[in-house]
Image 1 (tube, rainbow, N blue to C red):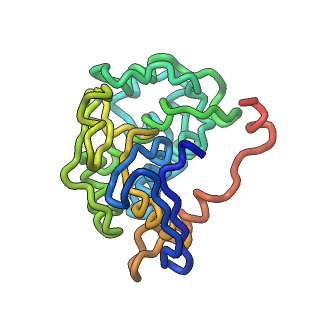
Image 2: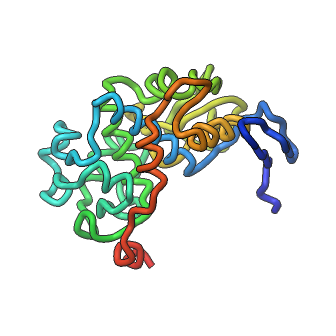
Length: 241
């Protein structure tokens, strides 16, 4: 329990329990892999807009990287990346945020299994999702997230610290919103987002309400259903054990 920072319980869009341990409601904290869920929502919004399709392959999604991809990598679909069955290493080989081209470095290591055959929890694969999203929306991910998700939900992201150096004495440790990037400025897809506890409640309520917020459809109900339904076969799941 020593790691618990806050507990909030929302019922019918009303927060009925608030508990904060050595912090306040206005303090931002690293939400680690919740970043992946936020990235999935943003991908869903881009799908709703017709910018992406889950069955698109990497050769089409990242054309500037196609020449360095193996045939297996080129065939990886966005759906497989989101499901973490892409075959990209779960050891996060190549995920070096100080690299001048982190995505190329990840792709340079190839795959460890055939796409679609095995589950491997992979921050590196999640970062490739970030690259796919930025390519599709043609602007920085944070800019897109503000317009399509954060601002509509009333999540304050200004000012924002962004950078690849997470030194304990650096900007990421300072109070306020932040989102880690790689050295090229691409927001990390798998971790490094800082939010407040009430912000997380809003994201949860968004999904409880089938993607609607204050009468506005932020992300489609079909994407909410798609992204929260079991997808792995027993064989895929056992492959990671």
